[in-house]
Length: 258
Image 1 (cartoon, one colour):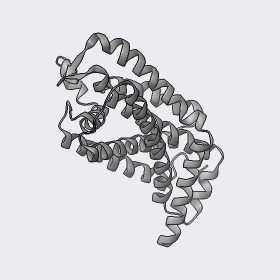
Image 2: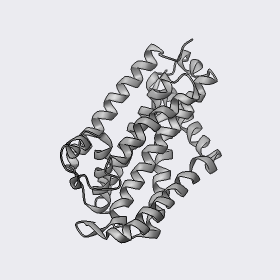
Image 3: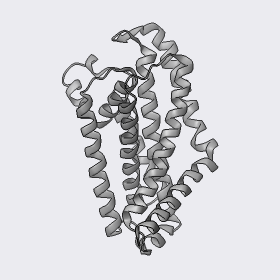
Image 4: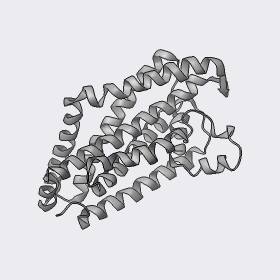
């Protein structure tokens, strides 16, 4: 396929994924906003009012808000692509794409772009909710934007890999339950990693979500538990590694060709 045909294919896949999110907006956009609103009410207002300031003069809810936004972004990016691509496997429509002249990178990029779009929309909605509870002044807009795009891309790629290996719908829930949720809660969303004693602090620094959350937090309020450059390098490394793995799995047809 020539470049113009590739662009048409990429646009078609991406548009289909985005329209899928829009078509069932009551299932894809509203539930995460309601969930995060409850987090803000319970942890931000009720618990946060007793904690007071946490770091550099910020209130607990101001410190919490960027973590909740990033958590909603990565959860929804992951959920979107894992369910969508597995559904395509189940319906055997993936096989039609694989035998077409469409390059594998177009298939991967189309699905990832749709999932990143959902993650960013949900993140923007949650950030809007956060502004009802506290005042936030974006200190580094470029860092904030780069970190959300990289974080959403990482978990979109991870969801893609999970969907490739999944044999039934229950399989796509294993990673969120046993991997994603623990890493998220231990990734500095609700607390500063500097509050931990060793060896827990060193173990937390091996958690990739810690770098995503804190890089985004630095972009929003200018505070981070990790070096921002290190955080960006870690995220770029994960995007590169997962992209190579996903493309190799598509090339070999693992779990896709009967």
